[in-house]
Image (cartoon, rainbow, N blue to C red; front, side):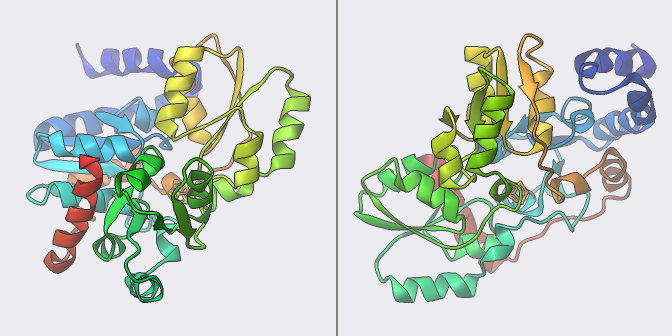
Length: 323
Ligand code: SF4
C-alpha cells in the first residue's frame, strides 16, 4: 500500500472530527513520522488529550497516565516518543532506563507538577510523621522519589486503601484528594495543587449544561472540584470515561475534561452526541505532528533522570503498578 493510500485510510478513521482540507495539511508529517518510526524502531505513546491527528494518525499506544505507564513497560523499541507532558516522559524513562525517551517539546509541563517540590514533600513528612505520602503521577521524578507510592486518577482510591493505615497524605492535587476522601474511610490529607484545566469547571456550568441539553449524561474527571463531581452523573479517569461511553452508549454526553478527549473517543461512537465545553490544556497542545517529526529526525529533547532520583522514583511507580 503506498503512503498516500495509507493516509487516506487513516483519514477514514478521523473524518468525523478533522475536516479533509486540514487533514491534507497533516499528510506530509504523518507519512514522514510513519517512515521515521520504522527506520528508528520507535514507538509513539500518546495521552488521551492529544489532538486526533496525533492520537489516531501516528500513535502506537494511547491511553491515560496509568495505561501509558503500564504499557511503557512492555514496549519493544529503541526509541519512545512521548506525545504528552514532561512528567509522562519521565515515567516512561523510569520504566525504560535503557531506552531513548524523547519529548517533542521540553516546555510541555503541568500546573500540578509545578505546584510542589521535593523540599515541600520533606516538610510535609516532618509535619506528619509516619503518615505515608501518596503522590499523583502528575509530578516530577524528584517529587516521586521523595514519596512512598504513586497513584493515578484511575487507581487513587485503590492505592489509598491498599496501605492499610487510617490516614494518608495525597499530593499534589487537592481536588483529587478531596474526591477520593468522599469514597473511603481513610482520612486523606491534601496539598493545594490544582489542574489549571479542570479547576475551570464549576457546578453552575453543570446545571446550565443540563438545562441547555436535556437528557445529557455528565461525566467528570476527578481533578474537577468536588462540587462539580457531586453534580455529575459519574466520575472517573479518562480511561474510565471512555469505557463508560463505550458500554452505556448515552444518546448525549458531556465529558468535563480536556477538549481533545471528546474528539478522540467520538471517532468510535457515531451514535453518541458529544457536547463540548472546551477547556484546552496549553501544555498538551505544545505537542504537534511537526515537533514529533523533528524529535525523531534530530533525536532531540531526550529525557534523562539523575540515577540518585531515578531509583526511588521508580520504586514509587512500581509499587503503584503492583497494587
Ligand atoms: S490537563 Fe491539567 S493535569 Fe493534565 S497536563 Fe494539563 S495541566 Fe497537567
